[in-house]
Length: 596
Image 1 (cartoon, helix red, strand yellow):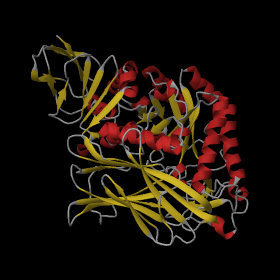
Image 2 (tube, rainbow, N blue to C red):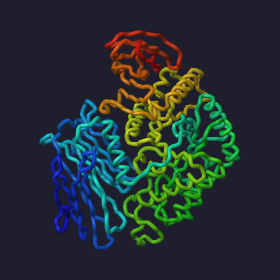
Image 3 (tube, rainbow, N blue to C red):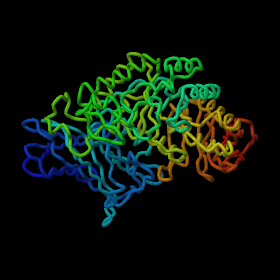
């Protein structure tokens, strides 16, 4: 093993060039790096840091430079457009991952869905800062991964690994394989994902926000049940009679009696509708106006949005949160929880533990304490209900988080159908068998049902969450919702559990495909894009998520094509020959294509 011991930088040869390891102030630490070949042919950099006695680990960096060959776009955990920026564009090309932020996985790919280089890190608990981009002088790409950029608890040994793959591989496969390696390298075993995690869901957030009452929710859910929804999430607002737009009232977690006079009875009424019930909690927040604020004085990390952020390194903090959720599950008969703001557990500036020498804390690392907390939360909830549902949202969607949550939701993007589609595609490839959910859908109730359906179709390769005020929606919208819920449940195995291939990330996934042994489903999101139906060895459904009234198919032989509108009503039958065929299809509708 080549190491830093009295010098500040060493390099190790890899197939792509040299991997440099640099530590400007190693102190008593010795940091070593070694290359090995994985069974699948990928290259692994093993990094080990050791000190003679526990000490704060030093900041160190692993970096590389490679020719820009077949590398025109960058896949990374916070991708908005997958553009590959110059390396001096720090606002665009720096990403931090940790237990509650993204997944440490980066892939360089071309315009034909081929990945030519990927890097994945085994460190998914502690923060790692990745940076890089185009080195403009010679059209090179550089990447760097920095460890311990913020204060970390004293250690005497630290080890991690980085996986590099230079073999040309289909992008979807490259990301899937690398994501599975991240979980394996971190020893992260995903928790159980019950079938209920894949059922269409109603959320109170966008339709009610914080002005939520039990009677209104029951009326909405009666409609939701008739449309086929099977789960409900009661979001923020249930714990305070007053509407405040910060988090100053969080932390005591007592049900507001004016809003929900009898929460257990309310949940029973919803269960009678055939709907599972989940409740929202903002995990780290103890509001400045809460009774819990005094109880946990001196046991917090910083103040944010009218609330203290609890320090999970205190065992009594973890116990309080765990007991809160266990009590709610038992007393109210809940089926699961939406656990929010996990990403707020962090050191914000100086670590307050240093001044009092970590007194009262049984763990010195915040990320490790978060991991301890969430593992115990899930274990205790699973004791009550082995099929407990736990929802997290972006950006806490990585390998570690999948140990404690089985529903990963797109971050808030109200009204943004494209963001839902792109984020679902990103998370589907990095989330294994964990259920990926859309952000809650809302749209203006004055638009035609065909336009509203585009929101649904942009999310249909994930579990669709609805947050439309159903009691105010026109009948045509309700018919449309009912049809697509029935469609998604009927084709659930292919849509949500089958082989998933989103195409052309650089174009924001204008085509998405999913299939199982029985059928194939293609979503078309760009007018004029050709849906390649292949040899039709299995029935194929082509979803028209465009505003156009036609779809173009590529057929290997004669076919029978049936068109359906957004309500599922028949809209025509066609018998095109082999080759390219333009077929009429209502916007928000779909085609069923079989061999003729």
